[in-house]
Amino acid sequence: MNKISLFAAALFFTSLGHAEPTKVKLWPEGAPGARGTEDKDQPFINVWSAAKDKANGAAFVVCPGGGYGGLAADHEGVQVAKWFNGLGVSAFVLHYRLGSQGYHFPTQLIDVQRAIRHVRANAKEYGIDPNRIGIIGFSAGGHLTSMAATMFDEKPEGMTNDAIDQVSARPDVAAPTYPVISMIEDYGHKGSRKNLLGPNDNDELAKHVSTETRVTANTPPTFIFQTDEDTVVPAENAVAFYLACRKNKVPAELHIYRPGPHGVGLFLGDPVLGTWSGHLRDWLRNQGFLKPMKRTAINGKVTVNGKPVSWGSVIFASDDPSAPVACARVMGGKFKLDEKTGPIVGKVKLTVSYSAADVPGLETADGTATTKEQKPGAGEWTLDVVEGAKDVELAVTR
Image 1 (tube, rainbow, N blue to C red):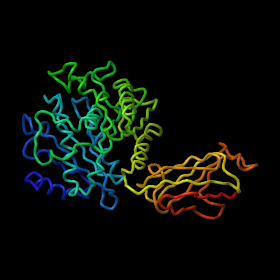
Image 2: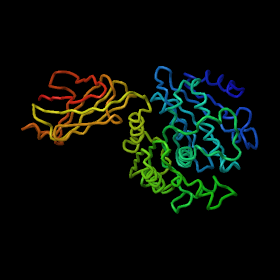
Image 3: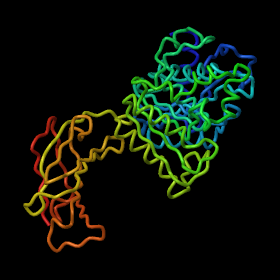
Image 4: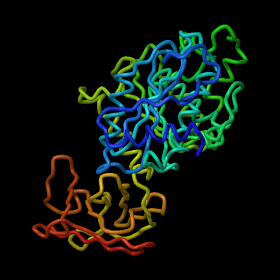
């Protein structure tokens, strides 16, 4: 381990399990291109390690927004890190260099690449899985996130070339949130472009950092949150990135809520808008990011009172809140899932839903009946799923 890593490792061990974060400089001996020694010149991460009794080995680098002119380090940094800790995920809030302080592209790309490499290179010390490192960013931090997801193989002029820089900078998942994406379209955020590119601003460079043009098949799975009412960074940015992911067959999920101004963060106080983070949690769970587990293909039949269910669903869920959940659509009494979308191998709880019309005389508020019991009074319905489960018969008795 080199001198830098030894120094950093000492900090890592003191941070694990603490309620308050530990500040770790990305270049303890001085950042490349730095104009001074203050925090604005020396990028760092605040390390929020998940509690040992809850940690699942996953990690996220968090990039607050601020138009590349400031950092919204509380509601787009600290609050996000604590939310991740609640999921058992360690978080690393990145304080990258800013255009308002005289730092322009590619400095920000160098900083975010270094943050990801730093976390991955020292995964053992942090108690995390080097193959489960995600990145999330808000507004301009969302643009930085999208650069990290699409330009991870780029070697910017001015970067260092030490042992940490030999580690992959590719995040395993990405979550650009109400992100600045385009620097060339009319819907782009002009302030972010000005601060990012500075005196070197020109259309060629602006296109280079317009990340809707940089998506490839190697871009990691992506989750995007946006609001329709956002007039600061319009939804066209998020949509453009999502469509680029679709074009390149990158697994992507996009959520656009109608209400909500720009810069809402988690907004957990809002009963509607605040639900977006739950969608992110569920997406991470079913990506296998929170807890990688063996999944299997499965097929079978569902009957109610001996007759095939006309339409409905079967949910296969574990007691483990980090484990993937599988949901199979039932049509004509049959269901089928492949290995990627199937249930985990082992004991799962079943929830079966079906049309109320499948049971003559049954009336429900929405025309759907749902049960977690094979028959009334039988208790929780469980199933031991084996690998390659075939012709599974699920019989509901009412």
